[in-house]
Amino acid sequence: MLLPALAVVGGVVGYPFFRTLYLSFFNAPLLSHVRTAVGLGNYLHAFQSAEFRADVVHTLHFTVGSIGLELVLGVAVALFLNRPFVGQRFLRAMLILPLALPTVVNAVMWRWIYNPEYGALNALLTQTHILGSYRTWLGTPGLAMNMIIVADVWKNFTLVALLVLAALQTIPVELHDAARVDGAGGWQRFRFITLPGIRPALLVALVLRTVEALKVFDIIYVMTRGGPASSTKTLSFLVYDEAFSFLKLGSAAAYAFLTVALIMVFVGVYIRLLQSRGVAG
Amino acid sequence: MRADAPARPRRAAPGPARSAARRRRQVTASVLTYLAALLLLGFLVAPFLWLLISSVAPLADLIQRPLHWIPPHATFQRYATIFFGADGRDFRFALRNSALVAGIATSISLVAGMLGAYALSRYPSRGRSGLLYVMLATYMTPPVAILLPIYLMLGRLGLLNSVLGLALVYTSFLTPFLTWILKGFFDAIPEEMEEAARIDGASRLGSMVRVTLPLSLPGVITAILFGVILAWDEFLYALIFTSSTAAKTLPVAISEFTSRFAVDYGLMAAGGIVAALPPLILAFALQRYLIAGLTAGGVKG
Image (cartoon, rainbow over the protein chains, first blue to last red):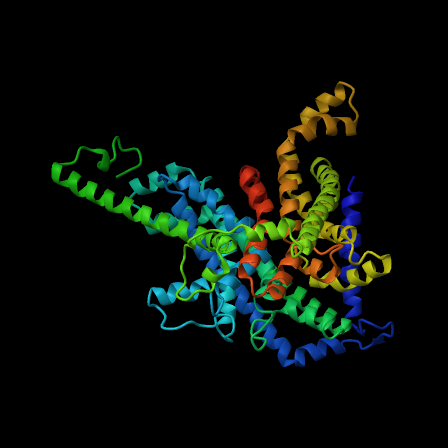
């Protein structure tokens, strides 16, 4: 009964995965069958390449920025929506809107909002006199990546919020009541009751979102194509460019594997974190 | 004050002055709550609302400075173009392709995932639980790590630029995810119910089809929901493995829309709305299952 699932995993993921590893030791042009083994040459070249290092920094910038904001905003919104008030159920349901919006539609939507000439953000900020003149949000290196992060956070903080909300509902109200009676303040109750209760959900959200962020491609392709001046180019984009713009499969495969290595480092740290908490708690 | 104290001090009847102060504090708190709620609602809804307005506002109003937020009249011309006009032809093909790819990929992954999840749930062993982690690792594998060999494989099989080829590729991330979700649901169904059916003469497969499946219907609905939403959303594989209207999906069509119809921002907005509607409708209609699916992973952690 496991056979179909194994066939899919082995055929569509496992085999190609090891083929990529194999390819990464070759100089393999996309449009020719002539391949020459170069050993670790592609990897050595990657480590010496300033472009590769810059793209690692862009990827980390996107990952740390978007995950950080998503966690803070997600937890804050979840705590807020865990309090009873009229309309609370409606707001909870509205969290689904950004979550279910297709990524490419989200990217197109924010690109239109950021439009340098007709964009809603420019109009809003000038009409409220926060800005004196229109700005080119996605055309300014240094600013573009942060604007992409905002677009990503708007869509994905809702996942964190929904996961944390579900975890909050499993914390018995009596715990809070008892702590209050014992004289615990708001921060103490958050620190010693709420936080331990939502920690597993937070870790799951952290792992899911980090893996997604480290392999980000679609939102960047649609919003900036890696520009301006390659300032929003991430690792997945580098692999894409290397393979399909420069037609160099071998070095593209090496970059792909270094991306996998980076993801494994992050996931490894999280698992260690999870296990040490498991022992302590 | 200890937990077993007979009454909390706050519930004890306060003096009139204290009660007025308390009421004022409560009013302030609820005013702040509703201000925050309004702010959150605006943050969640405003960007999408602007896309919606842009899709029906006349172009002249969209490119006006200073911008008028509410257009004087609405036009549904762009939706007519998308569904009936000559300029919407590529988009309609993409809509069909997206539906086909999502349908085929979800069906294959659902069957493979149900069988796999059932085996993992009913015959647990060390090797098999290791397998579950292989599934999880598979789901986390970045597309770029398998992209290039799949491109070469599809080329050799003549499956580049085909709906079926793309659907097969999508099973790579759908199968592990659906297996993970379904296993959680199968785990929650007591095995005794199947044993009872088998005592009454049902076969292994028969007891699975007649007893476990109907009980795990919520799990199946959740799996289909996530399969369709994830397949509908995918972009990188579709961008690279498709090249014409024969197989291009909506995300690819929309990303091209924005460069080809750069002038009509409204048409781009309308295209975005149409592409967003199927997953939005599914997610809102089945929100109970959406939350269940999200937290199935979270609880198992």
